[in-house]
Amino acid sequence: MQLLYPIVFGFIFGFVIQRSRFCFAACFRDIFLIRNTAQTRAVLLALFINTLGFTLVHFLLDGDLAAAGHVYPVGLHTMVGGLLFGFGMVIAGSCVSGCLTRIGEGNLMQVVALLGILLGSLLGAWRLDWWLPTIIASAPTVFLPAVFGWPTALVLQLTVIGLLYLAAAKYEGADPWSIFKQQGDILSYGKGAIFLAVANIILFALWHKPWGISSGLTHLAASFAACLGIPVTKWQYFQHHLFTENIAASLLSHPLIYLALAMVLGSLAASLYHHDFRLRRPRTRKYYYSALLGGIMMGYGARLAIGCNIGALLSGIASLSLHGWVFALAVFIGAYGGGRVLLRYLIT
Amino acid sequence: MDHRIDAIGEFCPIPIIKAEVKLTQVKPGDRVIIKTDHTCSSASVISHFESKYNYPCSARQIDDGIWEITILKQV
Image 1 (cartoon, rainbow over the protein chains, first blue to last red):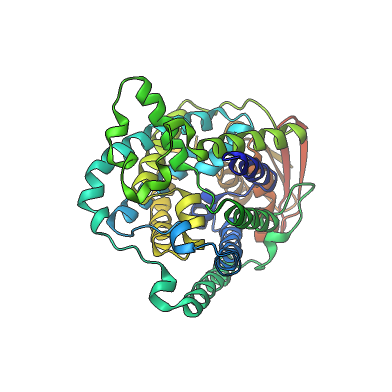
Image 2 (cartoon, each protein chain N blue to C red):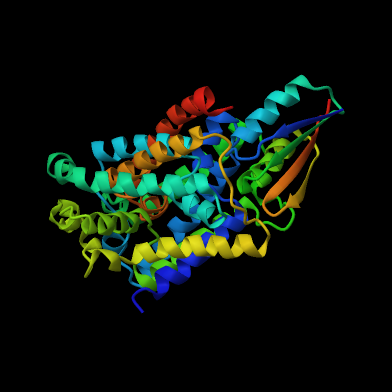
């Protein structure tokens, strides 16, 4: 029963991302590289709905958002983590959720990116022994409703998301609602955003925890490392009260490991059914290196920031936590840097 | 005239960047045809050139996981 919700919802997330081509990396990267904001608007729509939904769960279902949501300290670690994450996801060709989805479609470059993420997560968890006492322990945890009161915090956040949405459409010169345009039999970006946000809300209502991925991957990587004799469980990451949700009976019993695996299966099912599956090799060997390096940066960055594009960005902002917003800003800046490198070195 | 871009094995948004460059070089009425095996590109190329440039686009799945996307340059 403990694993039922993560597996069922992981499958749904993977399936929906595959069918809708939803992408968090494009949300930032395409603003700079091709002056396109379709995915930016799709992510903002998901944030808007998800914020409303988490608030409803908080009030109607007694789900304590400050305690059960993703509300974490914000500080230098969030910025550094976000910069690394944003840069890494552009050169790796996808974010953490995209990586799992692409693997389900048979993309070999993303298998290497996942190896990078696992390696980076392990490095990050190890280095938290420095970051936790030095930076994170003294960083404030800012739950917006605790600062502004619920009505102001909620209205403020929804207004900011709405304004960013309109600004994105204006910057591109696009019809704001173009993300609902249907293309063949695939889900529009807009519909994908709605399905993902609603699924995350239902998961939170039933399971009392929001969607996350990278702490699961960290536990998976740590269990491999433990097999090699590395004393991972002595690291503060696996003991600190901030991560009490992570203190599982064993490393391999972390539920988000199974959510991540189910995402790959959900994408595999969707891509097999729609004839999208194919073993894809990257065009040049260079892409394997960029995927590995980008993956390491994402894994390390996600440990510092306490979450990836899902746990910190989507679920963090939807939990009305300031760290989610700061992470998003840092990812935005990092993606700009990654974009420069992509233009310079990765176009053959 | 048709101009072909082979983007097999490339990842987003490289196929779009290549198509944008090619489209500035060709004449109105010419077609740029991109072959891609990247699932996201199969949707994002069309969405980009239709909504941003108003160039009519069409996609054809020519094999499992491979698409050929045709963009018609307008004046």
